[in-house]
Amino acid sequence: MNTSLTTTPQRVALSVNVNKVALLRNSRHLGIPSVTRAAELCLQAGAQGITIHPRPDERHIRASDVPELHALMQAWPDREFNIEGNPFHNLMDHVRAVRPHQVTFVPDSEGQFTSDHGWSFPQDAERLKPLIDECNALGVRVSLFMDPVPEQMAAARAVGADRVELYTEPYAASWGTPDNAAQLQRYADAALAATQAGLGLNAGHDLNRDNLPAFVAAVKGLQEVSIGHAFMADALELGYTATVQAYLACLKK
Image (cartoon, rainbow, N blue to C red; front, side, top):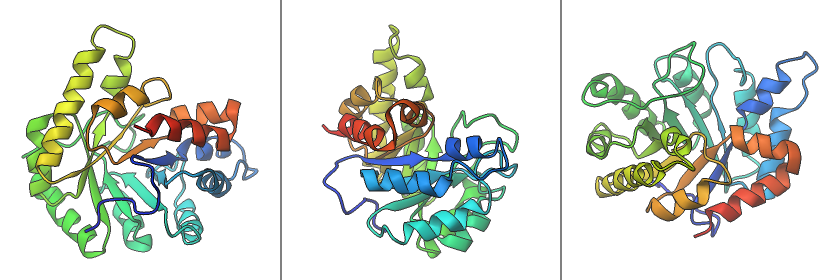
């Protein structure tokens, strides 16, 4: 299976998570701001992908958003659609319906405020494997949301994953503290273990314009970052186009 984005010279791809646009829309009954329009503007500005996390409670992305975004992505054949979520909740229904380029399995509970940990092996291997096999049969690349633990990477590959997405909140939380260098080394070590295991490498959670360049420089083999909260906070001030361009600049090595 192809594990790389193919149409841009950008060495690390930017996938914009549009959950927060949906969260704002859902606060009223007017249908604004439009999630599909936000995604379209980000793609027009050069983002290489769009990410969503359609939770069962529809607190932000609704089930109806998924086919609409899938339809939008057909006009951008060189970009990627990434759907993340827990495969034991509602995620697989969406995967079967639209067959996105990538699915990111995340082990969160239904009421969880935000994703805050990765899968664990060997504990999760048996139940994940048939779902990973199904995604592979559908032609959907599978990424597993993982903590930066080098010893876990070979197990993620053994269960059939194509990539891992490193959960980066501990790195982001350490930014500007004496612990930052040690945290960054954890991710560099996990990245090395992932690539040595034959995995592609993604990252995401609380990355922003301040902490992203150092992360990209230190974490070798990084292929994609998924950024939503900080991106949308910046977009409120800068607009979508300028924000995409700013994050793409952060990703250049």
